[in-house]
Length: 103
Image 1 (cartoon, rainbow, N blue to C red):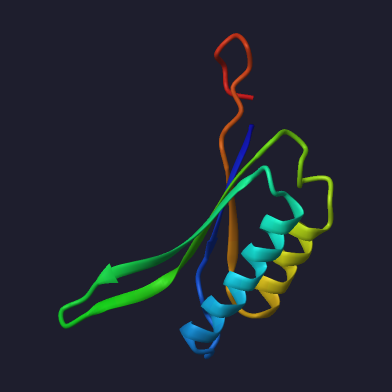
Image 2 (image 1 turned 90 degrees about the vertical axis):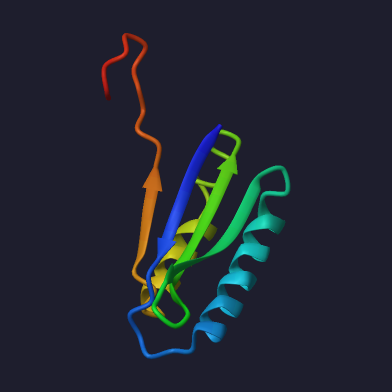
């Protein structure tokens, strides 16, 4: 099982609703490409003095080994996120070797 997360931090003057709509569409395309996988899109917020502030999004992916990583869809999505000013950060689980030492 491969577990990934992509943290998207907006840095361009684009409406959060427009960005979230685009991210919804990307997640739907990824879901269609890997129907056995689990994909979630979560809005990240931070409590402010008068209201919650939108600070980005988190896309979580749980996939069978090699299910999506060999394809271009994820790479293309990450490229497009950068072009839209979302500053994507790909987070993965740290692999552990059989003797317990970090790889």
